[in-house]
Image (cartoon, rainbow, N blue to C red):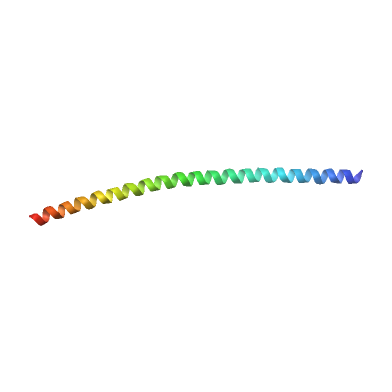
Length: 74
């Protein structure tokens, strides 16, 4: 009788361990997914801003070249 109670106790402990680890694993996966999504969105915004800066630099360079052309002609 004592062995069966101990076996159930071990079985219950094992199930509790699996459930506790399952919850921990689920929370960890959800946290990693949320972190990945936030960083992915942040990187998209960062790339958009970089492309905008590159385009602005190109426009400024073209304007400067035009200014030098006009200045050289004078």
